[in-house]
Image (cartoon, rainbow, N blue to C red; front, side, top):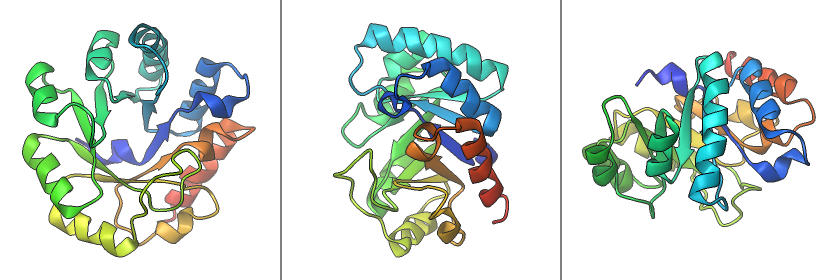
Length: 208
């Protein structure tokens, strides 16, 4: 996949919106410069996830942004999403690859060189690597040092997205990380002005 697609990787979190309209917030993020969007609904049943994904997909099409569903590839397929992101405890990449159409994006979490190698061999399209900082949305996330990130970077040809606690204050410190993209949750969807905050992150990345 085109590495540029991964540059500003937005990940939704309903809890951060304080009652604001979900789809309106998604559109603000895309207006601000999100280049790929992951719909993460950890507590939703499949039907609710699919219904929301279909609405979000319409917005993503408007801005030519790929929609990724977290964990559930069957929901992603049914909703017409562009791909799925699989954690280390989700369905195997091999299984998903056998059951999806051509062009379906499969992202995979990798915290070690061996996990990265296995994901690449199984047919993943990109890797999510982190947490590079302590994450307010995943308090039990294992920290990944710059050295560990570089080791994974040197072990694979897959594009890599840095994830975990990244925000406007610490983003510049990742200039030399070697990531192809950066994932944001609260730095986008936890902000009062989502579009302005996203543009600010984009401006920082463009200085790299």
